[in-house]
Image (cartoon, rainbow, N blue to C red; front, side):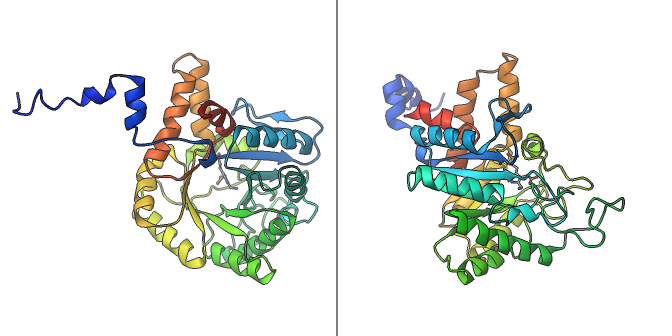
Length: 336
Ligand code: PBG
């Protein structure tokens, strides 16, 4: 027995709920939670996403209603994803001024004003018929037999620049480039500034891994790649130092906030990024993280509410200032 024992008794500070509350090192609050939402063009009723119980592809009307509930619960922001009725090789729905996200942005701005932060995911995979995050070299899979090619990084940057301007013009306060193209933040910053939108912020998906945890999202956003995968642009799960390189590049290019994605399996990356930068750090608790907890809870194998709150607290404890989570509204209600 050490000389200190039993003088040091950490359990003294764990004895009652009031004591534990007083000494808690990490606290969660609704304002740091962001709700990702899907809006789909051309549907009459919201469509449930089977691999994400409780998550829907929304109509414009159901999006408004659900966004309103999120704001009532006090969530800090909304991250919008659009699914067009028609997809093509260049993802032309993404920067169409009357594209689904642009329409939804106008709706939400009219309804919600400044009561929350309305953000948009900026990528092409939801909009291209081949499901890739950019335009392709070669034949490009524009519906013909000859599907193939690679993502053309620099041609894709031109598309991202145009999407950023379309989103800003429709009222996005923050654009979130998630395609992991080299130079995307610089291209978007220049386009926004050039089009008279110097005040629109960029939340860069800087450290985004080629992750199996995105599986259910591909159902929600109908964006599974028709061939190949995303490992030539998203990061290898084996790498950690590389995340810092990506984060610093994005900050040099003008990112206002940086993101780590996924969250739960990458909390070491969240901590390293938090310790390395002085801008807000976001972490995205992705679709697979959501689906795993919902599925295990449905089987009665874990306590759903406790697991959800513990997962979010852990993201905060690792150092994230902002957590994107499909449970944002529910968690915010529980916290307030
Ligand atoms: C790309 C994008 C993806 C996600 C967010 N933005 C899919 C991907 O990179 O394959 C995944 C989010 C989730 O799994 O919840 N537009």
